Length: 236
Image (cartoon, rainbow, N blue to C red):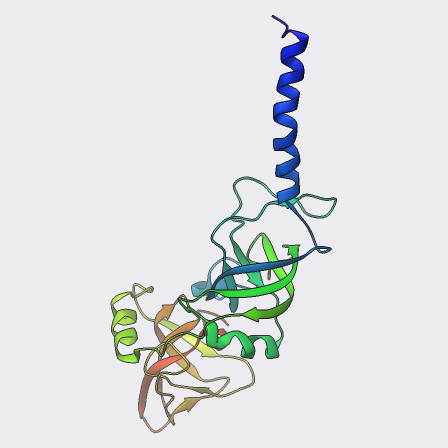
């Protein structure tokens, strides 16, 4: 049964402001600068060659990610699309080394971090979230509280992510220093390993650390946490 003309007009008047409001709340890819507030996390995803599993020879790609209180609404265009099943409240940050160094004090801070930037979409296997924040500018934030390294080490030991130790090899160009817990501030030791060294990996932490054991040519055994980005597990 068709709606009376007056009812159709009433429905149109009711729905039109809602659709306009919804469109106004959505943002444009790459051309609109947004100010976003959330919590900063380090996170690890599998990289080359397979982009599937860091325990099966894929490189560990450790980056910074901003968790938002609500998903973003983005307007699709010819290059980028968004779907209802994508997670749009967790953004990978595109940073250079200076950007990582600037934001590192705010990792896991209970106070909120505010950043400015433009939104782009995932284009390669190195992009691990549907939305990424680029041209990142720091606005404000509260540095994280000092880490309880002893408690962190205990929790990491209880939350093992590997059912059994796996062979690993140190990659990259820099030496890796052992830490007592998976955090930069936790007891950097004098002992270190270098690219090419073979290790045994007993645990990995989602914040970008691996617990490894190294045996020197003289038989000395060293165990501790090192940054996972230079640890290739089960790789050639």
